[in-house]
Image 1 (spheres, rainbow, N blue to C red):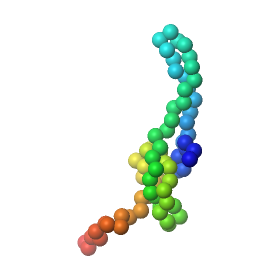
Image 2: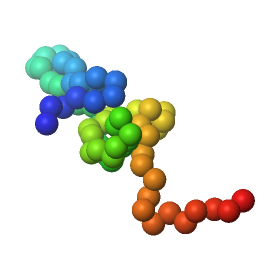
Image 3: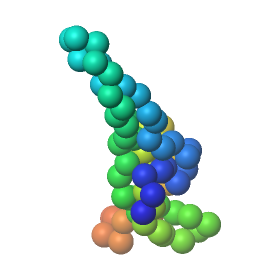
Image 4: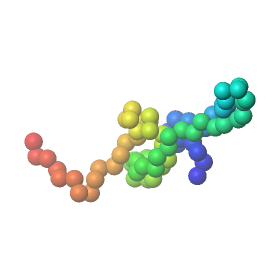
Length: 72
């Protein structure tokens, strides 16, 4: 599994740790990735997406098997 969102393509970016004495070492900022079940081409599949894609509604989750249908 690569550390990349399958929806938006977000991946780790490179930055620096900067100490109080201004010693600089490399670090990586990792995206917040979650494995979720989503509808991909009409069928449910487990994909790795970032939390911003989940919150913005870019990920369509499948209907629950135990969902009670409403008759309104």
